[in-house]
Length: 295
Image (cartoon, rainbow, N blue to C red; front, top):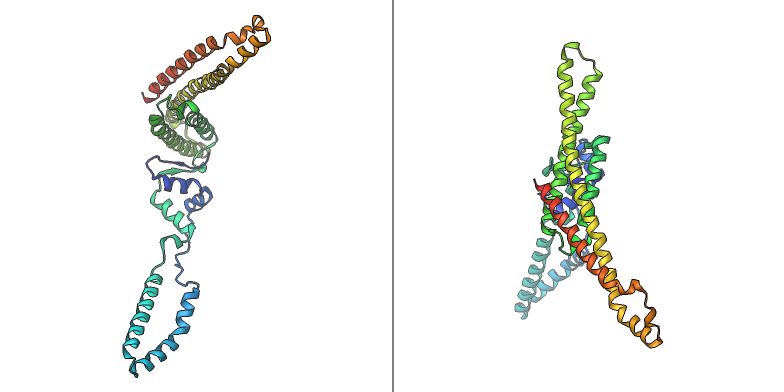
């Protein structure tokens, strides 16, 4: 199931959240990373050399400044000061990429709290329904007919993740209410509230049925896409065979066996036309199912 992320979250942050489900569970449970910032750095060789050369440079500058070569001493002094200032500037701030990974994940998890859902947010029934939705969406987005633009790939790329998020959000809310309802029943109820409880249970059942209906619509769409996918691959195979047909006909003619040509070979062109029509019908059916989803 993994982490389900609101499509409005930037892709790079969404990828980070999906890749760190265990850490997000710890954040959800109240874990906070250490607030310490690594201020100490491993001293680089250039820093050590600069530090060791300082006394020598100072002594040399003193000699030069006291001699006729004083201008050279000023040049040496200016160069050395410039090098030191550049080195200090490069060490003054901790680069963004040096932040500990866990703290970075924690900060993004807190910032986008409420815009991602974890496996713990779903009870068993809701998890099964969400898995069905994700399987249907994945089969559409991974299909060749979608990649080739035979479907509305741009709308699929936007609408299907939005459908996944909306279904997941409703299932998480449904799971939370069911847990609260089970806890309420476990405490025992007075006879006077029986009618109210029945209404609440009916609301839960009806809500789940509505979500399942959405998932079934996705599955129907995926089924139409799967049919188009089969026709797409079969058409490709037929086209490949048709391209080879002249060589077979030439062989049959040269061997004097052309009168015994296999009828199946002669029907290749007809089969290709049939598959083309099947593919178009399948794609049309998929488009109709897509419009039903939008409604």
